[in-house]
Image (cartoon, rainbow, N blue to C red; front, side, top):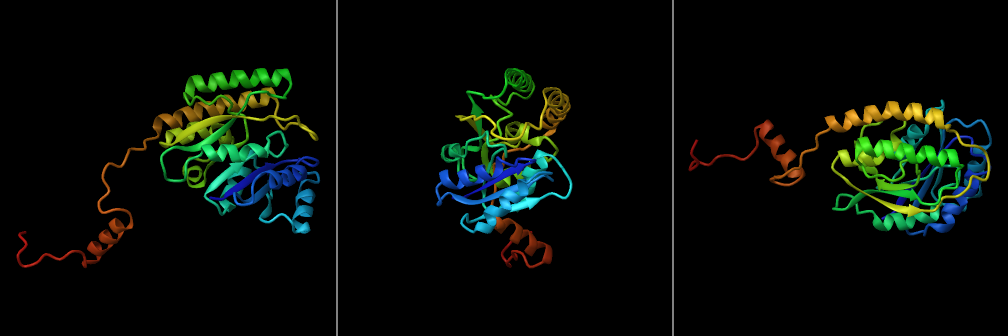
Length: 268
């Protein structure tokens, strides 16, 4: 089953072109269906780097989408996922700190859509390359979030994940939702899993997040996600007779008056 790789990018000149080429180099052709770069209104040459690769014509399935207004990472992810044509999604940050070579290993742990097993497999950066203050802030944020949401996610800030496209499109959408995907998937009855992944230093540009800014947004979102989880109900279906579309077809025939007919021997 093929995967659509979605990469949100904002001012990642010097990183995005290298990352796209690397992605095609390390993910086998029989797995990689397409790479979609979603440019969240960059002001540098991010778009030019991707367009040059498309013009070269050697990277099959490479696509470039650009927002007309800056809308944030979660929105960029959703734009790419809505445009994707394959049932499995892999996401990475556009700064090159995620290693695309980890994607095949994450996919091995992911269950096939609609079957039992993890619908999402997230990365866990065990050897962070970020500065000490960001590592401390990340550990505290992970502890606080897990204390409230109980999703056992060891690294909510890790951008590399693989998951079912349909499952993603069913969970509530809001800005910053990308940091709460494991909790949202669990709320909708799905299994999730985590695997250690590589973490790399940024080569060009600078981070778009600050500790203070991330903390303020994180607290606000944490309250909202906690409320969503408590208000979400996904009951198990214990009977489905007859199966699937037959139910809708039968209901339609009954509404039209051409459903199952009683014979003369039937009792009212």
